[in-house]
Length: 322
Image 1: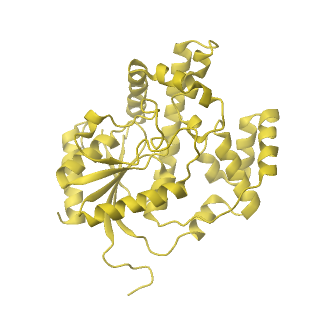
Image 2: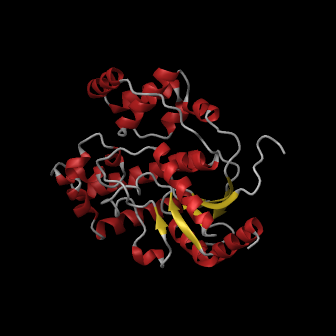
Image 3: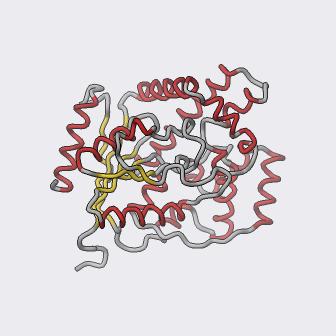
C-alpha cells in the first residue's frame, strides 16, 4: 500500500464558505438526515459570551442536534489552531466510536485545512523582545504599516489578516523572523503524511456577490435588533486589550459608539463593511482548495434552499453510500 494511503479513513463532512451563507442551517439538516453531530470550525465561536457577534447557532436553531466546541473558552484566554486541532480530532474519534457522522462547520479556513490535511504545528517559540518592538512600531506608525511589513515578506499570510488584528499580525511576523519561512511553506512542511480523514467538502456561496453582501447587511441589522450593543458593552473592557477574542468582528466596531465618539449608524455601517471584507478574505482562502464542492445558492438552485439541500444529500449519498 502506498505511503500516503491509510485504509478505513474516518469519513467526515465539512461545510465551509463565507459568513452569512447558511452553513449552520445546512449542517443541522445534514445531521438530522444522517444522524450526525456538528463540530465548530469557527475560531471566534469557540469563545463564550459573544454569541450574537459571532452568530453562534441558537438552541432553537440546533433542532436537537448535538453541537461541539462552541463557547468553550473564556474570551480573555488565548486559543490556537493547534489547540483546536487536538479537541476536534478527539471529538471526531469519539463520534466514530459511536458510529456518528462528524459534520465540521465553519468559516475559518486555517482550522479546516489543518484538520483535513493533518497538519502538525511545530513549536516556533516566543521572542518577547521582538513582540514589544512590533507593538511599539504599531503605536508609532499605525496598524496598517505593520500589516504592510507582513505583506512584503508573506503576502498570503497578510491576506488572511485585518490590520486591527495586531496580535496575529505580530505573531506572523515573529514566526517568519524566527523560522525564515512563509506560512504556506511551514504548512506544507508540517503535513504529517496522509490525512486521517476522508472528507466531503461542501462550500456555500453566491454567484452574485451583491446578494451575499445583502445577506451580510441584513445579518448585522438582525444582530443589532437582537442585542449586539448590550453584548458589546459587556465586553467593552476586553475590547481594548490584545486578547484574540477582541478581534472578532461585531464588538470592536461598536466601541466608538459605546465611548460616545461615533453614532450607532456610523458604527453599524462600519461593521457591515468589515463583515463584507471578512467574507472576501474567507473566499480568498477557500477558493484555493480544489476539493471543495461549491454550491451557489442563487445559481442552479435559484435561491431555493430545498433544492440545495436535495443536491447536498445526493452528494453525501454518493460519498458515504448511506
